[in-house]
Image 1 (tube, rainbow, N blue to C red):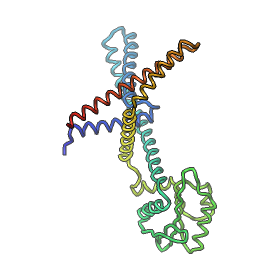
Image 2 (cartoon, rainbow, N blue to C red; image 1 turned 60 degrees about the vertical axis):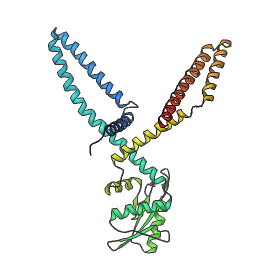
Image 3 (cartoon, rainbow, N blue to C red; image 1 turned 120 degrees about the vertical axis):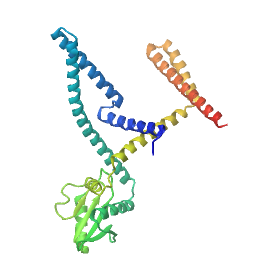
Image 4 (cartoon, helix red, strand yellow; image 1 turned 30 degrees about the horizontal axis):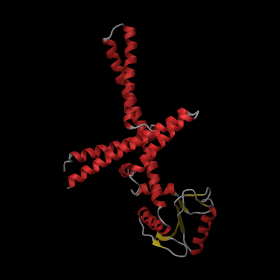
Length: 307
């Protein structure tokens, strides 16, 4: 089905939002448009500099123009390849960080029971075996190739590491219960050396991500791009709501502050300071007033259309 103009515009708009986000992340806050403008200026400066150089040598104009265009073409072509490779590597790093934080946030919102259910689904897909809820402090259990596995899920914040003693206690406990293998899964990390004194399979947050990638459950690039767009729109809506919440009293108070600061400036040695503060209050109040009037006109116009 062919996309309409509205859908095409929205798709292009969403693409710009995503590009802007990545551009600001990898270019120290510079937007996608600003980066492109910098590139154009670079090409212009390179062309003019090479033109001046070759014109000075040849004492002509036509040949330097061709030489400068050739130099700009081959230079920019080489730089574009290098920049694309470097940019893609940086974007990949940003995406991985976003995916990791998204997964981290999702897990942090789970309680312990929900985390166990979540882990159960992951392990069943990864080991291609059904896991059952255990008892006696065993969260999950299964049998793989004739060997009984016991699973312990540790739900904690990223700052809290699972200490070595807790790992060893679980290992000794499942040996006592007669299990041949044990898996301990943490939503954070394990203390260094936790696997030195036992044969447990320890899965921390990093290994959990690797498993999710293997079973195609890790957030995709499309999901992350959608997350960026949704967050942008959410922030934009919040900003609109804040602007709509501008009250007349706030505007009046700013004008009063302007009058007060401006009058004080005539009776103090810091005259310029108070005048500047007063002018800032005046400008802010005027902008807020203009926004409120504009919003009122739009609302009134919409109301008239619905009549």
